[in-house]
Image 1 (tube, rainbow, N blue to C red):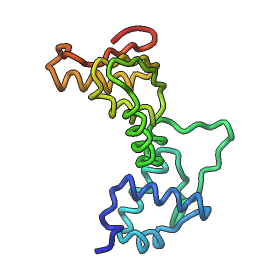
Image 2 (image 1 turned 135 degrees about the horizontal axis):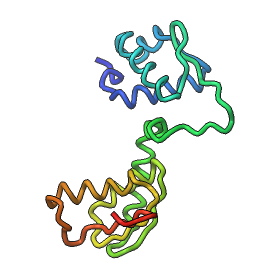
Image 3 (image 1 turned 60 degrees about the vertical axis):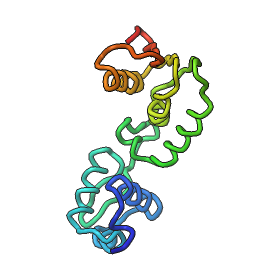
Length: 163
């Protein structure tokens, strides 16, 4: 068994996307050999990446998407890009946040990862424009206290209102 057989779908798809961008296209049969997975696994990966707008499927493989320069991929499409780098950035940033601090988090995929790393910072106040970021704290509070406000839990101010 090769190391590639143990790759998670997300990791495999990131490798495929990198290869498409680097080489300008990939073939299913090359990917099956390189990643040591079935052609159906590769085809499902290509389907998923195509649905996210990350690449275009062609007969026998995939090529980069030709996009207008103003195209901005959506949250789901961006969330699969560089997940380990985002997690490392989030972990490092979270270590800098002192208990009782007030911080602002935007609606990006890296700040979403940061929110998950901030759950154990006591008495934190988070101001955000992102419902997804607010939900990270809300769901953690529900999981930890049955809907009641737990001592030291984050106060989240969602611009436009308080949740």
